[in-house]
Length: 305
Image 1 (cartoon, rainbow, N blue to C red):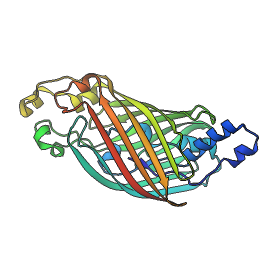
Image 2: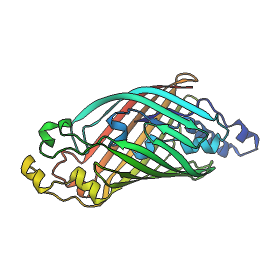
Image 3: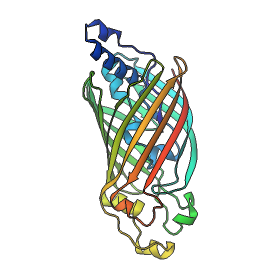
Image 4: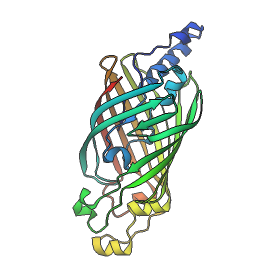
């Protein structure tokens, strides 16, 4: 559940001073203001580090835009908040629950970062409109008591540390479309790889106190991950009553998300996220799931120093 915009009330007066055209000025202003609401995920409990209908790009939305439009930032930036999310109990569940938790987003000189959405990592390669990062994160897995009547006999997917390699690229100031790719490996738990591909951009209607982004995303996963989350082994079939099922590698899901930020003043802001996702491939055919389409929404209150 991402939130925590990076900086408030930044303008592009310097861009305008260069004599750029009105159209480019307007587009740059929109992107610059949108960049000011780069988001950090919240909820250090399950939602931020376990599968969610949120697009992976929503955990870091706006950060590469800020870098492009506001290169001279303080060496240390910090945002703290608290919020709640309403999401499925597990992938494919038609039962939802509410989670509450804190938001932490700390960044040092565009090199080191600690975020409840992106994890704790470092930007190892970067340019004016792109970056490549490596981060450590944590997956809380899936427990049978998340939904005992439907997960009984399937066992737990144990919590596990993760390594995430991510890259982001912004097309240009005049056309601030952002592409993001993230490759995540869990060590234990599902013990597999996922690949998340997404794109987003700031939308018309953004102003000095309200910003929003929107974009699609797709997720791929290897056979270890898919079997852990959607497969049913012979032992699990005997214990649970589900038919035996082998889930294979490939496309896992596709979705669309919207992220919004409203500044109450220079320091306080409210953030909200929403997304819809459709399970695909062998995930959609799993006997464990109750629905192929699910969604998520969250809201948070934050303070930036």
